[in-house]
View 1 (tube, rainbow, N blue to C red):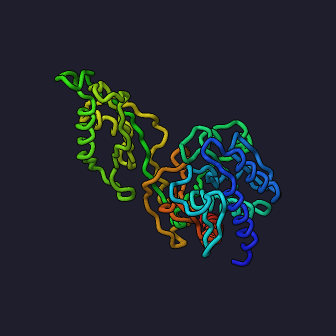
View 2 (cartoon, rainbow, N blue to C red; view 1 turned 120 degrees about the vertical axis):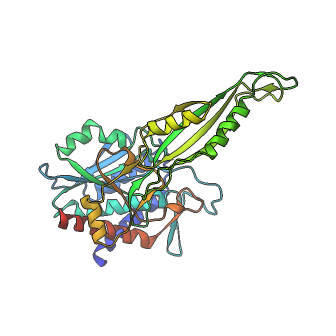
View 3 (tube, one colour; view 1 turned 90 degrees about the horizontal axis):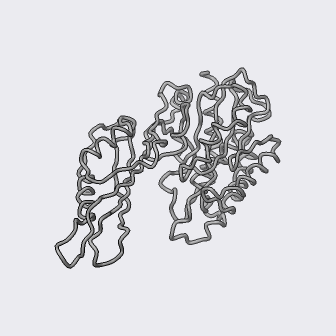
Length: 366
């Protein structure tokens, strides 16, 4: 759409600046500065909580409900195998190549463009609040979770209720209505030390191997029609003992569990405790599985536009929100965290158009 070209041009320019600025999780200050300056240059009053930048439309009306537009500006470290500098945005063959271009820079700049489109003249029957947040890649406590509970953020809402959010993650602009939760467990197999040359000790590695075999054969039979089976994977194993001649008394391994919405974390831990000998300690219970109701106005608006909906195997900041949230954005999740990560210029352009249409359709159903 021609009317959106200035917005997409500015968004792509911002994306290139973001790629050029390293923004690993917990180290996002410089990229947050860039985003804040960009918004201010476009006439937007900004607010800041650590490395989280937020803003609200100019004619914010506390008597109206609010929809949150959120995505993150932190990135993982570059994957091995880049054929170009991951911090130099390379425009080639209709793509912008660089770290964070797809996850989630393209989504964030598309949401920022959408917010600016409505900022001065919000004709929607609800408010819009934009939040560009930190630490998503590590599920950190100084990102969206901090912001949503911060006094400054709550004061600026003026009592308006957030009734839903658009969470920008690469979904090919289709609707991820559900996503698996993440439960990370530290497991410790305990044996008894002894000399490897004699029949001494109880080898903790053997106990760990038996437990890992039990995990591999574990069947979690509650299958979600949206997110499928819960998935339990051992991702790391080690012993503190490095001597070749000592039977280890302890062996640690790490369990990554992607939990569908049919299981609680407590239920998963109970099942594991019933089949494993190792001691289990959960790192956190924060990243719960989530689902936005299919009759929520954001989802109904998307369905009326012909968008498909599905369950996502990956976890996002959606898990830390206390209100319904729809994960949707330009780009492809399969490119995230890969070498030569890229997003198509056309995807950003269509992302902006898609977000605006989704909000317009939401307004018509409101």
